Length: 391
Image (cartoon, rainbow, N blue to C red; front, side, top):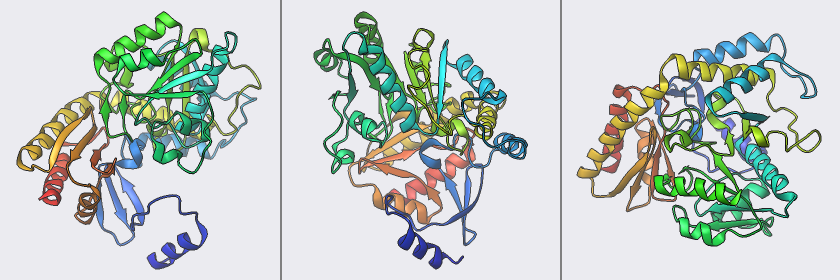
């Protein structure tokens, strides 16, 4: 199909639920994408964090190729070896517990919400405290948990049982806790909310508060998980362990998967018939995810993330010194935000024209989340283009 035909088919046949960029990509490798005209782009925002290994990583492709000719689907009332292997691998990297597999971050967070309510049911607790500027998904329950009114508009009334308080404000959390509180749910780095980093003292005190009040601490690692912040999971940067953790995006290497991990003591709260996901944890996607975890380990990508994250942060701060339009650079690992004092939409467009793909959230925060195997040479090129766009 020609580009004009593709655009028209989308207009005529696909719901307009995304703000479309007029690019048609046909090939990807590492941190590069090629459009239908053959133009190459440096991808510094691969799928909202899906592409932690870049595009078409060999270990992911090998896993998919090995499995797809043998068995694509088996329902979850049967067993298959690769779901078992993936669950064991995730528990090894995380904490003693049990895993529920699904297809997306929203599904994983829905599962966590249901688990928290079931946990609190015997004592009449059902409320979950979340945070302003959080983003937990687009289903009705995860929208209610999301602390951004713009995503909730038009879908009211929201499901009951959620409270939003100010991020990094422990006194606000304490004031919100009641006898009805079953869980506290947060992202340790708010991505869609503007790359806001949880303060260490706040997170440590939050963990202590949950222990004292017997409240579940639910950490949404849908975007931060699988190495994005320099540790396999972001909570490990704080020296805490959550009661429940949710994963998605990067775990599948480009294929759809979600996972909820609950501490061992909570692992049997959801029993047969209480929760399910038809396609969750199928053979092909589990082989892909095992390839992702293998690559992170064998290619030392956590160390590269820390090193390249520090390098990119330094380069962006140099840009800040020479471009007064930059107010602040913040983030963790290779999850960085550049806050401007102007709207960032035009900067994103200029970067795209020059062959660099980035994102803007909260109108004025540029988001850069390159693959964990990014190189200094690629960072240098990206920062040069960003500087030209800002200039």
